[in-house]
Length: 317
Image (cartoon, rainbow, N blue to C red):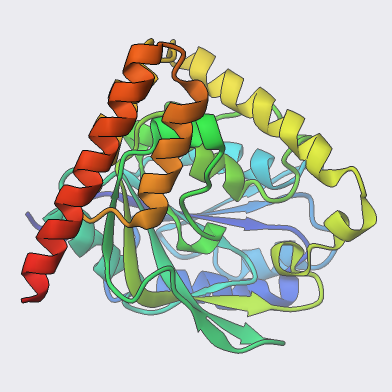
């Protein structure tokens, strides 16, 4: 398949990042494979962001939305999604930068792996802190994670600017109405939402995004967490509302046999690690109400674990 035939949308969300915004837009424009559309959503900035955006509106593939009211990051994701026409949507925070080969690498990955619904990649930190953040040193097929996410709340993904999602997946959960709950850290909605609606997730080990560390960086500094001592309690109820909304929107019901479904979901990961086995063991032990299936599920899980260990040992020889 010709990767240029896959229509792509880059959604840049911005609030008062006029000093960084040009670099972000230019990094999206200067890809080795061109984005079909770049949509800049400005969340009613009070700095000169609108002037920065105006410099780029003559570009054929650049669109923009200037919101009249500041509503936060999730609202910007909602607006960008509703305006986008791409088959695959890529997300970029206005203070971050794409490496020139980011889009081409991601599209080649989607092309090779037709079952891939969601990708996140490694990234380079720059600014106040330098370094490379990698989940692993090799590319990974992470399988499906519906059961895992619902029962444990596991967050399988990365920061906003490393994320891309197929339209058919993201349309199952966006737009999300809880914009006040997710004024910041709305990448949680993308990561959890994709898992809950059945996205098959992959990880690219090459650092293809530059993640800027600065004094206003919400995720890295986590100032709101330090100030609000009830943060985790409030976050629990936000997550609960989000999960229930997504499940209800898609008419999903939880499986009667948790053990059976958990084992099948684990098997969608080609190379599961110990953490994966422990996670599903905990789910079966805590949430399988049928005693027969609880015991059988744990037995089958251990049997599969031993089988994987044996296969891995053979590969090493």
